[in-house]
Length: 247
Image (cartoon, rainbow, N blue to C red; front, side):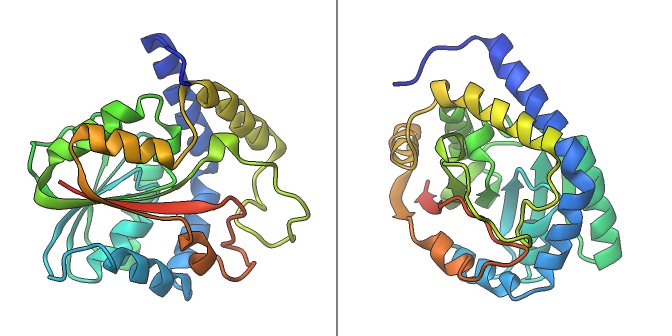
């Protein structure tokens, strides 16, 4: 069962998340740009296109955009992308990459639990490895539901990271290879704070999405096997899932 927490803990967790990703922003961006120019591009695009409406010009919000991977991926498919992230350094990297790549997208520093947009603004919301860091996931899903237009879709890729087992015998070349010991310690501490205020996922996500008013919820727990079929520099050892849900 989840435990109650106060707003001070909520803000403390967000500060820790921001500090962690600020420290990783540059090396993370390097990896994402490599991923954008690899066969991972088509793997991610294929998974996204399973749920996105089959038309061009969708207005899409990428929540927890990081350095803009999903924004750049989907903008080149003819969609209108906006990316938000709590970490200013990530947004600065995303804006620089937008100019370098010549791919237009709007990027803003915003809290994923309370994005500052009008209700009914987006055809789709996409997010990747973000929801697990949110201390009030219920609030986030409710807000995201409001931001979507009627029949709009949320596509969430994530893992139950706060309950993951420590990876064993990883090869030298994997997605977390450049994380320092200090960063690992910060990551593990974050997990200990988030674990008591969350329930096992993705079952909890399905429950929260229904409570927020979403419908036609589709859960895919094999998506990680398809995307990370090879152990390379992009490999994520934590099992991930995909959830798509309509307003």
